[in-house]
Length: 367
Image (cartoon, rainbow, N blue to C red; front, side, top):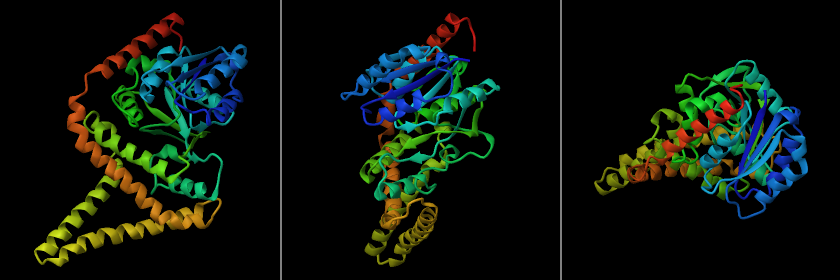
């Protein structure tokens, strides 16, 4: 089988040297590997780094192409890559990532064994470690701070999951389901994998495969990320409720409970019913207990403990509130946002499907 390794990047000049070094070190044969690099109208040296790598290593690979994504969005960038990819297997790698040398080889082997979509664990990592960033990594690596998604931690054997990160796909999967929904941001993976499952494909997660995603290096950037993630959960509810898990709404429920209890407490004060403040106290007490317990668990599992870890009981609620407020904002914006959708994204999904089918026919229909 031939493999297309695809990377989409926007202003990633600091992250790309490490990732390109990882790609160059892959043990899968380079003459069976196509590299598809997509630059999303970066205004730094991202495209230059892609082109320099292509100039230096082009003769080693089946092909290296540097393409443009003027729309800039992640979903649009992946559609550019998928439409262009000629490999039997298409692998997505995030620009803020690192992959072991055997990453491509193990994914290709699993696909060759009969799977159609596969991947593995994707734990978090940090660039340029400091005690402060180690604390942020502990928060992001905790189920309490990020997600219960199985792919974020080490898999247990071989199992089938609802979604995967840094996934590998047989080309015929995209020929059947089409490309990414460009109406969505942050949740485009959820929606695509929902369609993949609806079309009868299974998503295999193997403990033999691992890759790493670099976390945001500051609390401010993490808060911004969580707010954006929460906002897109709220918006996606109006487009594809089936691709959203109930667990995505836990921060929303927490923030909503705080707001309702606070409102009830205010009303209780106005009408001489101070007992209504007990609701807020109960919610806060329950959360504080969970917060302290999970902070302690993160402390016990941390690799490099420092005084910064004492901030975890503060960092966790900040991240949860940011995510929950984002979901509330998304739900408020949903009616107007949904009204503004033009149907263009669905046409693009179908266009990707046609281009993938054309690529398959030109290659002789091989998979």
